[in-house]
Every structure is written in C-alpha cells, then in structure tokens.
Image 1 (cartoon, rainbow, N blue to C red):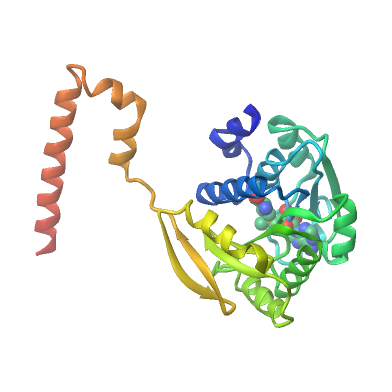
Image 2 (tube, rainbow, N blue to C red):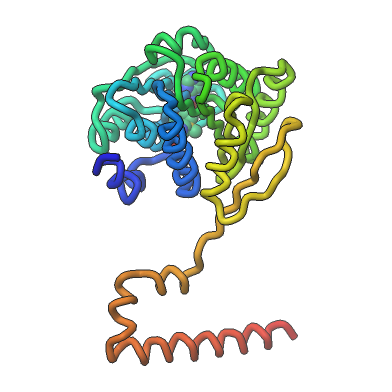
Length: 280
Ligand SMILES: C[S@@+](CC[C@H](N)C(=O)[O-])C[C@H]1O[C@@H](n2cnc3c(N)ncnc32)[C@H](O)[C@@H]1O
C-alpha cells in the first residue's frame, strides 16, 4: 500500500463529504487485502459516487493495471428521483486528484438505469473485483444496480450495497429482496456499519471470516435464507481513547500526571454518586 492510501485512511477521508463509516473502511480494506492474497484481480467500480468518499478508497486499493469506474448522474441531478446524495463532478475530480490521481479513472456520467453488466465489464476492461452499489435508493434502481453488479463481478469479486438496513431508505432492502427472488448466483456474507456484502457462493466462507475478523463481535444470523455475519463494532469510550493516546502516555508518568489521574478518579466517584441519587 502506498503512502497516499495510509494518508487517506488516517486523515484524508474526513475532508471528503459523503457517507462512509470508519468501521466499514476497516471491513472493506480487510476484504480487499484478502482478495489480493487469493490472487483475485480486476477493476473496481462504484454506482453512486457523490464526492468520492468510498470511491477514492476503492481507487487507492487498486493495482496500476486495474481500472476504477465512477458512475453517477453528476451534473444530471434532475434525474436523481429520490434525492439520494448529490453527485458533483468538479468536487469529485478535485477530491480524487488531491488524495489519489486519475490515471485509472473511467468516468461514466448518466443514470445507472441505462447501464448493464456487459457495459460495466467493458468499461472496466474485464470482470470486476469490487463494486459498491450506492446510487439511486428506490427499489427499482437498487434491484437494477445489483443486477448490473452481479453480471459484471469476477468469480472472487465482492459487491457492497449501502443502506439495505437503513430505516431512512426501506426501498433499498425491498429492491435487494426483489432481486433475490430471481435466485442470482450471489450470496450475502456480512452486514455491518450500514453496508451489506455479497459474493459468489464459492467465496462465501473465506470472505465471511475475513469480514468477521474486523468486528468486535460477529454474530451468526441469516439474511435472504443465507448465513451471514452481523458485524458489531464497539467504539472505545472517551476514557479508553484518552488512555491510549500518545499525549497521555507521555503525560501520565510526569508530575502533572498524578494529580490528573486523581482528579479523574475523584470526578468519576462523584458522578457515580450523583447518578445513584438521581435513580431515587
Ligand atoms: C448516497 S450518494 C453516494 C455516496 C457515496 N457512495 C459516498 O461514498 O459518500 C448517492 C449518489 O448516487 C447518485 N445517483 C442517484 N441516482 C442515480 C442514478 N439513477 N444513476 C446514477 N447515479 C445516481 C447521486 O448523484 C449521488 O451522488
């Protein structure tokens, strides 16, 4: 991985507007690395790029030979019928150049409803390794985009769909279920941090385990009649974050460290006392 990747993970993505939780970043990076270790190759694509928050991550995870296809309405926002996001080509290009480059970029401006798996495969110069589906959020568009992705994915490829379990966008889940009525050659393997992951049945166990290893807890559950890992990520509390920070590690052994620790512990005792009183 190059330094641009490390920079984007550490800081860069916070400067790019969009929808991508840190926990999903961990899972996506782990899955892409697992693909590498298996020798799975191919381009990446995202349907629904907005300003590039996830796209840039996928781009930076690609090899010099792998195309990265960005699909969005961009300037045709009058076609964005459900107002999901707000693609902006100038902002997207600026973000991509700032955090990566555009040597492997294949831009496709237009509605994903006019796209097929064959066209996507052609744009990427072959079957794809990783596809994010996060474009229009109606049931019809979600089902159509998932069909496009499924038709273009490589044997060891992964499809990640946003918002399948987001109560703000129930139609996305409807679309995914409608699509699975057709019994595609695809299975879900993990759900977590607002992303749902799919692959061919041949790779389910490998990717299930790789995704589960990124979570604090992975609970076995079912989706679409298939076993999936529900990934839970426990965020460390303020105390744990401060305790692990390099600044506190330096400070704790100095003369200021002792009174600070005393003040924290006294404050905690007082806060507990107050909570107990409020319970009455
Ligand atoms: C939720 S945003 C995507 C967020 C992005 N994946 C990220 O990482 O932040 C949805 C995007 O889908 C685009 N979009 C909506 N309907 C579309 C359609 N029918 N075809 C292509 N793109 C569409 C919007 O322009 C918007 O940029």
